[in-house]
Amino acid sequence: MLISTQSSVKIKNGNEEEFKKLYFCFADKLYNFALSYLKNAHEAEELVQNLFIKVWEKRAYIDPSKSLASLLYKMAINMVYDKMRKCTQLSYVSTDEELEHVCCSHNDVVEAIDYEDLEKRIMEIVAALPEQRRRIFELSRIDGLNYDEISQQLSLSRRTVENQIYRALQFIKQELQAEMAFDEMPSYLIFIIFMLGLQG
Image 1 (cartoon, rainbow, N blue to C red):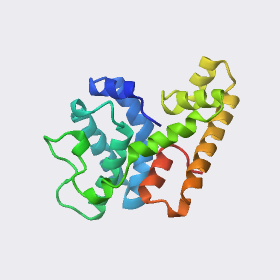
Image 2: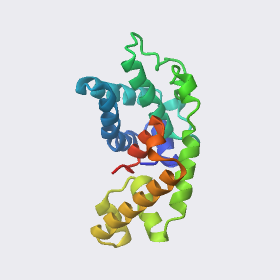
Image 3: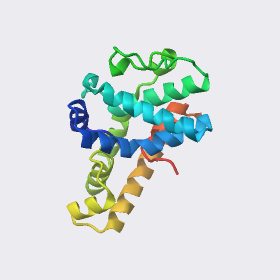
Image 4: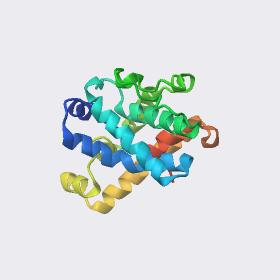
């Protein structure tokens, strides 16, 4: 899911419903990502819970002009790295720092990741989709609507919605793969593709 500026503003202002939507859209994906590296269900679940707790506690520092999804990626990667390296202190958390500076370890890796440019590239690809397909994709991945809600809003069958989203995802994945061989993609890029539902 790509997170809209409006959604980021609502979370920054303490909108619990919007934060719950964020959680339900990302929690399972973050858990699966953490589990794939940590190989421990309890640690993976604890990591995801701590991640979202920290985002909520520091929501006042969210900059809506910047990518909230990017922040989640950075936090997840750093938290997994910290766990894997068995750090005794939670170096990814600094009580008085802004969220954007939460990843204080592995800076050489994190700073090389231009998440916002990647999201911008994805949105350029989305803009090239046929109009109906683009609209359906945006309602799903940006507005967070489920298939039934999209079907009702656009007066389309659920089957049509499912097919259009599938085709949109395949097109985005193919465009990204054309720019970089998938087996040569760094782990963070594979993670972002996974988070967007482009795997498979």
